[in-house]
Image (cartoon, rainbow, N blue to C red; front, side, top):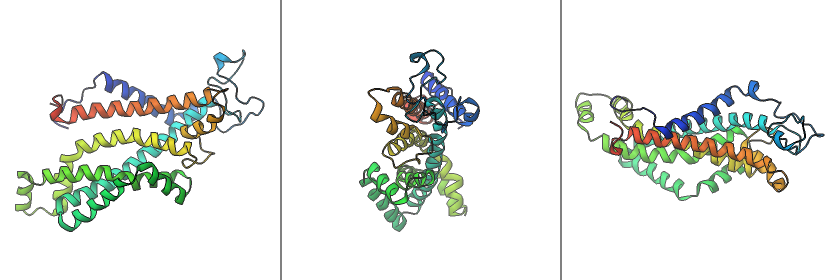
Length: 282
């Protein structure tokens, strides 16, 4: 990143602070959660938050219809959201970047096949394709990651393809060809480092998108299994009681909003810093 000023601005600092807090919750969940997230207390179901409950209530954010502690489930749910987000983005980024590099550098048959496949995937609404894949594969965390990788790699392929078309015409790449550097060496040692900036920005923004979509699929019953605490699953469980137990959906919803906002803030900051055309990156 030589030549780029990566100092945090106000929005970037806010986003990073949110993400650090979420990451701490995910890593330290066994120590931060006041209760077992799956422990049921049928004598204390749909209990309101502490400040709205009778004196002596022990559940800070209340309980759900099975008496499970909302705060504990939100803390453990951060693990599910972050693991799925990072695994999905990592898989999508690797697959899409490699295919985009190949299409942009070699052209001809590789370009036609890969970019037509990109067009096909982009022509199908994401949520529809994800629903079909999850219906076929079944509800599990691994299948959820597979579904996201299968439909989100095209974002990286398009950018890697466009950037590779530009970079491969530059003098240093032509000099590498003339000096006998292998094609693989040119791709991964010379072209890839020069296109990482835009890909990193997209990956950061995709993390927030994946968390939002994972919550949506879990809300529809096609995401994380019911026994796994997830923010989308909590929204789905609480929607039937939203008129009498607002806390069942409010707090998981806030967790989703804050996490997505944090990734978007950091993504915007990276875009401003890594793109010289923005005027702030040098």
